[in-house]
Length: 205
Image 1 (tube, rainbow, N blue to C red):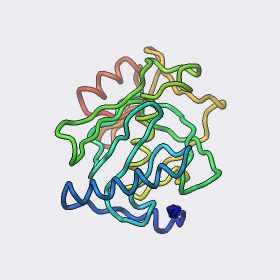
Image 2: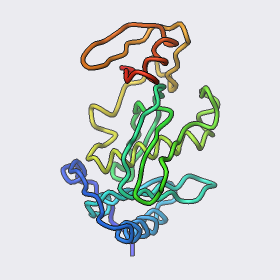
Image 3: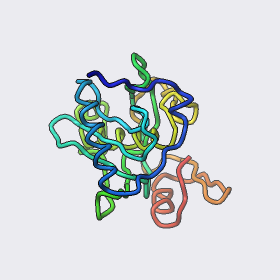
C-alpha cells in the first residue's frame, strides 16, 4: 500500500517529540525506510512526514547504507557554507535554493559517539558538488533535522536567493566577512574569522 506523505505545512511546522526508547525509534525508522523505498528519487524522510510526531529520520544516499537518526540533535555547524538546490517529498515539484553548512556534527540516541558529516572534496567547486555524496549526505541530514524542528526549505529563514546565480559560496583567506557573538559583530578577514569561530564561539553571518 502506498504511503501518504504529509504536505500540510501547518502540520509540518510543528515540533516533534523525542522517542522514549531505542526500540520505539527503530520501529519508526523501519516504517520510514519502507516508505522511502516507494520514492526512487527520495533521499530522506522524517517521521512527521508520515504523520508520526517523533524525532526519527532516515537518510539514504546512493551507493551507501541507510543512515538512521533517532532523537538527533545538531551539536555543531561548520563555519563554511554553501548554497544548495533542494527538493522535498512534502513539497512535490518544487526546487529551492538553501544555505547550508558544509560540515555538521550530530548526536543521536542510536550512536554512541558524535557523528560528523561533510564534503568528500575540499574546497567544493561547481564541478565537484554534483558528485559529492559526502556533501549531499551533510545537506540531507540538515534538511531532515529541520523537519523534526518544524522547518521547511520554503521557510524564509531557510531558503535563499543565490548571489549572481552561483551555487557555491566560497571565501578567500583575505576576504572580509561579518561574524557575530553575543550581539556584537566584527568585520574581519576570513582567515581571522575561522580562528574566532573555531576557538571562541563566534558565528559567520
